[in-house]
Image (cartoon, chains in turn yellow, brown):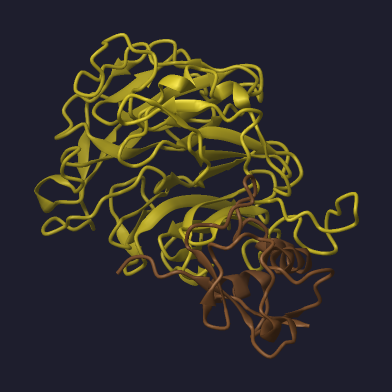
Length: 388
Length: 98
């Protein structure tokens, strides 16, 4: 029977939750990297023992960690004396060196002036679908980096910032590449999303990028109804069998595209509010989509104090509230954009973490939920791995 | 031999307990101690000084003999009590927030 490993990044460390395929009895290990902000951990699809982790701190900056044994032990890649050596024979210690390519340039600042690009942290790590040594990093200030040596060194793919980067402006949460989707059928195609920046696609492995925002409407954030960049995209998701179909949770509005982002259509339908952060797709049903409606941009908690996941089995527009096992009163947590994931079992397992430190799981496609763990630090990210 | 005291999180990152003892080639300056420390423990690179600019990270401070050397140039010589090993060089995570 398959095993499940859930990787949880929190404000004060990482936690690893494991269970067998029944997904009823969970073991919890951690905190790993106690006291550090763990923005994201994600395993390689081709080698589940290899996990990349983003560790950061307001004091000591960015660290990249890598495990090659499923999270039991960790190393900063390239920092061991036995690992990669520079020409002078010393370890390079560059796994946390994220330096923008060439002249860093400027982007739009809050007062309308131009402001220099400044690296702050890695929000999201996306391992390649075919090579365990290759991974992408989405960073703040918004850019995408790539490693091909297991995280020892990172190089920017600067073409992304040439897609009108001078017009991107940080929102209250910062300006970061927070979502990276790799097309499993075409490694040259990558999608990224940037809060207050928009949504972008490359078809040449990251050399050139274009905004894919036609159909997005942001009347309260952008005065220009046809603006190509600046839309506050909170999250995008795809099903691996249909990489041209994307679902989006925007600042306001839930949307879909059926042509790789060339045109978006709103599918908010009968949601109680179309503001929210995460969005994900059922592994067995590509038209079944999950969101967690949040009251508004001013009130980052669920409407009426009721934590409800909403599921559409029709690819949007018609939504049903999933409440069994979730608190239906006095609940004022948020669910952040990277804090929802699905497994590959049938029925599909859905997992999400809250800013209140709960990680909820459903082993029946969302019909019922249990708290796997209740009192972690604020959850930043949730990812799922299937183990043989 | 120069004694260096690291803050909790950097001790964990470098996988050391207690003080670190370093031999520093040439003049013992703030910069030379940091260079020697990063050479011995490459995982610390970028955690005390920015990779790109080489500037001290804002919430990392350098103390020696009850003096704050954080704002001094990196070529500032360390006090004799530190170079002799009588006193440690302190790398401190600054107070930041309540």
